[in-house]
Length: 241
Image (cartoon, rainbow, N blue to C red; front, side, top):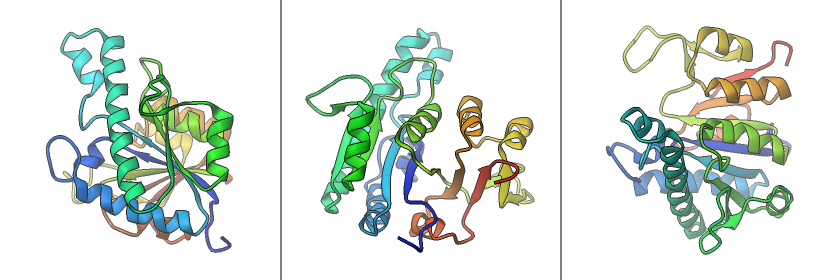
């Protein structure tokens, strides 16, 4: 473990990241790549937990903007995260990684209820815990869920998986002159309105000095490289970290 800079991490995946190049649903190739990478670091002793969004299936905020009741739409979005969590669990277990899905909305036929001390015990036993159904409350994003669960389980870092190489001063997809940051303080992320995570999640991390490592998940091996301290992505942390 000496070569890894974090022993316990929470991996935040957006639902959109699971789509790959498709416009909807889950790309099996993305699940395979993620599973291989997680298996590698898990086998080396890194304790990994995961929060995954549901935007590849249903986005509560988008539905609310079209007239649906916001709370109802958010609950539907939470159920979409459970579907993604079960798909990810299946892929990990096909790679011989022991997993548990823990849901903030009780549905014991498919997932354990989220209980903090039980989650920590699973993690200590080397199981990959996937936190599903957000916080169980409407009006909170899975970014906020990731910050909350990371703090609850004592994670040393949130690893935010994206489709770009880190945090830029502009959208690198549309602006070829966008400049990548190697490191940023939380307050600058908030002041600049950079789309790292939502403001509630950033504020929660800032208040508790929990670093956020933003990296490109589409380059296989980046999870391990980032954990080994290589120059991968952008790290967001305090001014004097």
